[in-house]
Image (cartoon, rainbow, N blue to C red; front, side):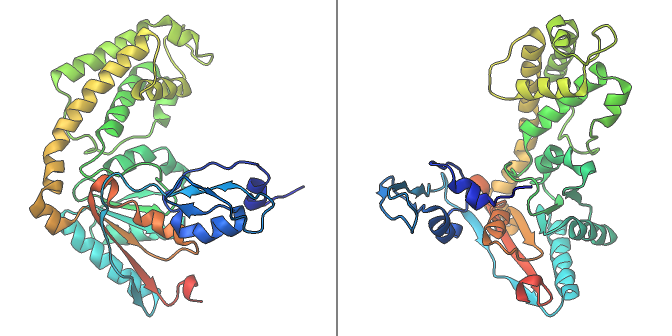
Length: 345
């Protein structure tokens, strides 16, 4: 079987395009491997770095829309892993008592599971996000509430990327899950309904007001009466009264995003999702204002990201740090290391 490295594969194309928040970290590698220079200009580069192509576009470094308010604290290094873990757990326990949201980044699933177990033994409730198949489908739920007061999240460094952790919670994610659950209860078979990930008891910030509840009921009725919706689902059954789980997820995804939708059912679902999002945003606003006001920001400082080990790639470490302080929010990061870690060997 033929094999090829990512670097060799990418170099076989005449043009490369991508986006990352950590281009400066690997500026040297981008230059030596791909002949690309990281700059803050749109000028063309005549530096070939030994590659046959003599005229290459720069990799553009675009500044953040808002100033970065995150504080990156110095690493703390212990003689052994036991000491580092104990100090990390003490820090998380203290932050949790203050009500500050915490994200703990681990390098593998085993470490994330062990960290979650240690926290539970200390009486610190936490949610886990890693490559465990049972948790993958709950990723949107977990990320959606990771920025709420007092929430502790344990995740592998690669999990949950691509989604901002909003301080106070993400009303868009919550609204989407609320709509999905309501439609699933009416439009899925018992078998498919059992496979839908369940959210925690306190996941939603409030009960739905009458207006949003009515919009959701109308959306359910519109979906049941939309024959085109069932006709497009080859897996639907029970004389068109049920949808497959995949069809339902597609309906909710399309309705909750910004693109155009067609059909009475999809339009009604979008209207319901909009009303629910507004209700949840209003309910979260007081908590979010508390997180953003000067006094509490001074005391709490936003999302606190804890690293349990350094990765071989600095980009991965910087990506973990970047989970805090998104969109101008306050935040802080710190790594708890030990001389037993692979990086010191």
